[in-house]
Image (tube, helix red, strand yellow):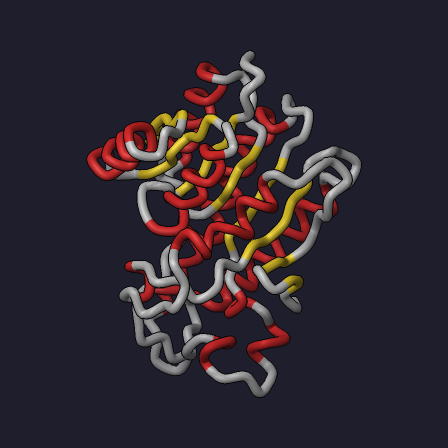
Length: 244
């Protein structure tokens, strides 16, 4: 196995995921670009390699499909033999509006399948590879809109987001799932944390955000590269800890 650290970033063909891949690559990591669509995945890998100078490789990956996720784990095992960091970045909003009194329950199921069950599916497939790393890290890309403290407080939409009964609770669910992994893996050296990128201008929100994807990637990169003894079971943004 190579001494170069290996990362997998899901949903890395664009936006925040792409910038996480670029940032880890700039630190000398080899980065798997996980994405469903081949053309966009190949284009992202080519851009990372040719423009950013990153040791990037494509990983066909649909987080909602068991066989796709298993094949991704096999690809990384064959290429690198281990995984040093998993960044679960792939996510969807489910569109809008999402008023709880009128939402189609199918929208909630779809969002949870990607944002929560997809994270569980990928994490479980990659745990054996993470177990071969000297300093394994898992970063789950959450959002401050999943903070129950902020949702129940007096904040405006800059901190709570709009009413979104599929998307916001999916991030609360993801936070809760993350803590269950922390509890189960407490006797291992895997550090597991949630990251909030802030209100980033991406196609996820129609590019209405006020932060760049590069700015949004910063916390995830920091958590993926934590030193041994770093925090685990936390929820972080650039400004510090996000209240649960």
